Image (cartoon, rainbow, N blue to C red; front, side, top):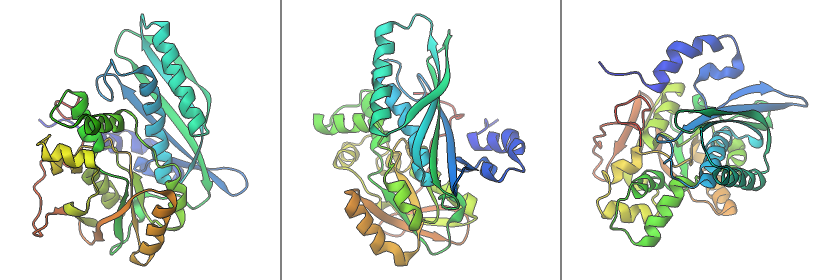
Length: 332
């Protein structure tokens, strides 16, 4: 019998508990929303990370802390919110030494300063099990301006920031895959360990994008969430999906399943968004101002699901769309 998936569990067990509160967005979006004073709204998100699932137990502790912050800030960015506050819960394994904890706290401090967020609370406990961390992040935005997954429209272009596949190939680098030039290997490992949340881009997209989310579980899977919430389909061209030099080198070396790994691997934390075709020049100009690559990769269409086509216009066969926490072998 096939096991559950994350979104099926949420829909069955937890979404009914959110019924009746518009800001919960049926638990299908990157964040929840609630009204603040003076015409503002607050976006709230929470993510957990577990050693052996989201990071390697021997990863540098400062980078573990910074990844925890950044995956949450990425959710805020995808909604168009400006990060303000975080709360953190830590379950540290018994016997964790003070030097490790000091390094962890130093990483947390670095990112609080870099992203201008303040730690305002949480909880710290010990555990006999693996290191388990959870962070809640709050961001602010004008009321009614949030970028939702449910707002895509047929005929709109699909865009993505930065490059895709670095996180997935970075995981392979962390597992010891070899054969790459050291600079490419290190670049991929860095992108896996230290995501770049697009906290400046997100708020700038509020006047341009219709729907958005961040790429965490895989480009195809996450675009599928936008399609499901918007009751539409999508078509993307694999050749237009932006790749870094390091990811291209990994594909050339036969890492993983090549381009399919880039499309479905996840851990990129780029912003995936849709926008009307007549806004394409403004989006290009925004990317130039931010010195950030913004690439149109396809379009929203009537129908269901995500179609990925190759240079001959044929569908790419994908065994899976992205990462599933509850699939066999989902740990590192």
